[in-house]
Image (cartoon, rainbow, N blue to C red; front, side, top):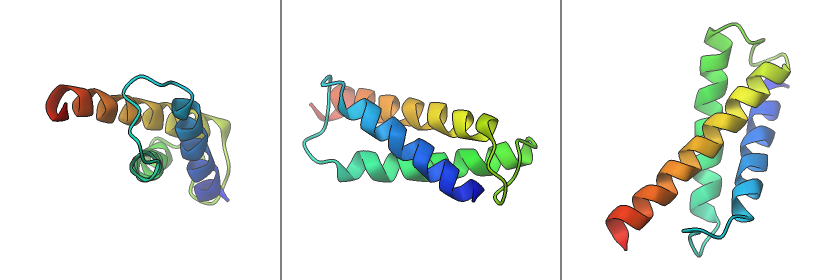
Amino acid sequence: MGILVWLISGLLACLLCRLIPAARPPGRLVEYVVSCSVATVAGLVATALDFAGWNDPDWRAALFCFLAALAAIAISRIARVRFFV
């Protein structure tokens, strides 16, 4: 149940970022992969920090995953503008 909360918070971060047009990539797949993978890693870190666990949903872990996914998408967009355009 906790892993599902992590993934949902990562997907919500991706959906929120899709509303911001600055440096938005043409495909959605890259942002979905980045947000879900970072949210999963952040969820594991949140488990290590004792914000519930992979089995228990907790709002602190969801917020941690959401913010980490937002930061990762922002970094990927900045890197795309800086290095690939």
